[in-house]
Image (tube, rainbow, N blue to C red; front, top):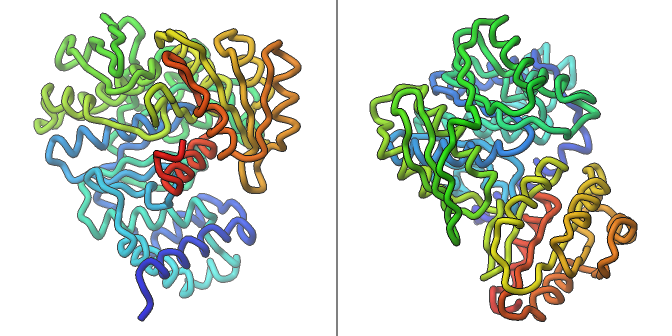
Amino acid sequence: MTQISDLYGAAQEYISATPKFTKKNSMDNTRKFLAHLGNPAQNCKILHVAGTNGKGSVCAYLSTVLKKAGIRCGMFVSPHLVTMRERFVIDGELVSEKEFVDAFHVVKKHLDNLPQDLQRKAYHPTFFEFLFFMAMVLFEKRGVEFAVLETGLGGRLDATNVVANKALCILTSIGYDHMEYLGDTLSEIAGEKAGILRPGVPVVYPVRQSDVVQVIENYAAKIGAKTFPVEKTAIKEIKILDKTIDFSLHLNYYDYIGFTVSTSALYQIENASLAATALGVLQDSRITAKVLQEGIRETFWEGRMEEIFPGVYLDGAHNIDGMKAFLETVKAHPCGGRRKLLFSSVRDKQYEEAAKALAGSGLFEEIGVAALSGERALPLQRLEESFEQCTGVKVMAYETLETALKGLLSHRADGDRVYIVGSLYLAGEVKALIRRSGHDQF
């Protein structure tokens, strides 16, 4: 008898292989296949999240608060760090391997029986589209009331943007990433992200760059979407503690409320504020001030300034804006010893700019680099060179991630802090390595 774990492995293999024989589909074809599936979860209230940095964190805050309010909530996010099941969270829990397999077979069955117009186009979902369809099938089966959807890339042409019943849109911070698809300026990128907005649907966004805000507000005015900007002045009384941060946030319906985020990452103040503001805009009587506070405090999001060992932090920052936010937190961390850095990246990210910012910060007395696994990995020599050209600090090149971790972690003195940053893929490989090796190996 075939075990569920075998079926799960086979499903993952099929999905992982799809980039080899698919291309991005038109929104019309994506919409047609969703209809072919029976438009699953069409009655869900969709909370749609787009942006450059912070999308996953905002989704996590939203999902945790909704669960705390007793509301059945599904969350679809990307990428995953270790297992594909991380992309599907219902009521705060990953879906089971059996649920994953069942949803996969529903999508595959419909793919094997395409309507004629999609057959003529030799239609097949991309990797991300396949997973999105599975998410909607899972949400339908579990009777989800709210579905939190994170865009994969962009917004206007993202597969998740075919959903009809949006209750709210959230745009997180906008920065330079995926410029080959989204545009060369922040205004162009913001325009693509703002493509998730819908007439009559509220949109929540941070007030940062004036050109980005102008794009969002002009687009919202054009289609008739009500805007809820989160101003910097709405956040006060920030108090940085050892493993948490306290702050007060002005909400339209509650005035100022005190919040605690259970992280040392300063950038999570804005992400939590966006989520809290959005949930306040919903005006759902089940989401009380107390529920908001408790849900925000209880939220944990892997790979975002996560303390994986005492004094060892793992962060998925992967673009220049993410690096700047990461460095702000590093500066705020008290350190009685030396700061050490382990960096890696995929080849299509801004690794040279990231290396310049990290090395130029002067925060790290020891820097290590190691290549990731897979085709997208940046070669070790390129990693080493990107740092050596902009720092006088000795750069240690490690052949494997495992030797890098052992090298940096085994020679720590009391008070030292180690930071691992550069990519969510790096965060995933580190988490997988720790799970395989056991905590006592480092």
